[in-house]
Image (tube, rainbow, N blue to C red; front, top):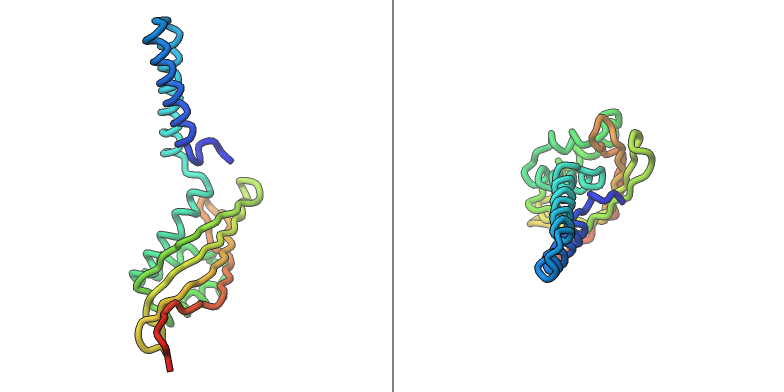
Length: 180
């Protein structure tokens, strides 16, 4: 794992070191403790700044799926199709069909696990997620709420990840109402 994927532990450790150094400097009055405090603060701020500026592959994927969920809610088909590998026409056709048959009002990703594989220049990834969705489906009267287990395969092309395949378990309705 890259040290700047999540810099908060590093920044907290640096803040603790700076606090201890300040305490020791106030007690002993030695300049070395003041230098140690300043160095710890610089390293801590540097870690936070690096974390903010550098977007790792994992972070890029973790940001992609909420963006796609919002696009599905607003009916923005172009954003969703732009995230699909353009060379895979069957995948694009299946996604378009799914968007025509189901119009989600709400899409919430409650679990997202990302696994990265391969070298940086040919990076592949797999995202496994649990999605809660609610909306109108063709052929169903009234709104439909469902849980969907979704596994998505991605590949990095041109600095961004594109969806190359997906597998969804059958949607499990979450409505508790009795249907006759």
